Image (cartoon, rainbow, N blue to C red; front, side, top):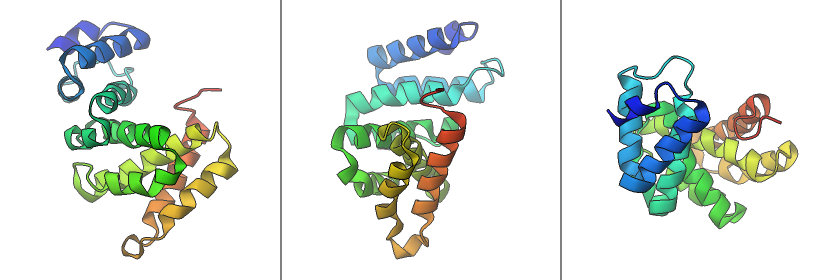
Length: 173
């Protein structure tokens, strides 16, 4: 497995390795390699494969745009779908937030993957607002409307904001 080259590397080296793999062989391929290596426990316990999945997902978004969602899986705690909708939010702006929720409906892995995709969007919304939590919460409000999900989208979006604020996944400061 090509991922074996990255196993004993630093997080930055791992990210560079998988980003280059995505650039050279495609985001879909790199994501499959990363997911396989994770399932096979090739990485030491301290390697954050979810963040590596974001790096690969970012490249997949550059290559395929929103259509990249079809290549995502629910491996790596849905890192791929997070990257696709956050990339869409950044490129299309906040007026497209409901569009990103619709894109999440195509996240492979069923209802759980859909929920996690909207949760990931919440992380991106907070980063998009430069960590202005009040503004981020306001940006999540439009997703609360669909009656068939009992405002689950709003709850997941807010959950992503809250988790991002506590963990600082996109910005440790």
